[in-house]
Image (tube, rainbow, N blue to C red):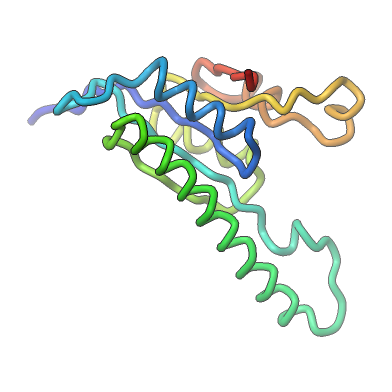
Length: 157
């Protein structure tokens, strides 16, 4: 029985230029295109928020509103994945898996690292200052402290 010895690299993307820059950096610096069998397995993960987390509390008629928001979130996630596929295709990287997982990005990325026993997690930096980071939280900061692998934070050039 042959054991898959590929190193797994997880890239967390969102709908911002920062997340897509992280993917561009990864395929430019860590992935060797054109190889028939790449030594690296690339996994691109987008965390889709739940409708309830987007809306907060909802009152009467919540099911209608939640279904509309869910539909919009699914469409937005599909667009993010489509952009990621274009980046990979433009750089001749075809050995890649794409996934959309519902939940908070911090937890989704750390769970993906654990599940796939990733050697590296790559995320983009939004460049928030200390005040914004304190209020909004920082996915990259959380991942640095909680992911069980090396974390690379890519700043948008």
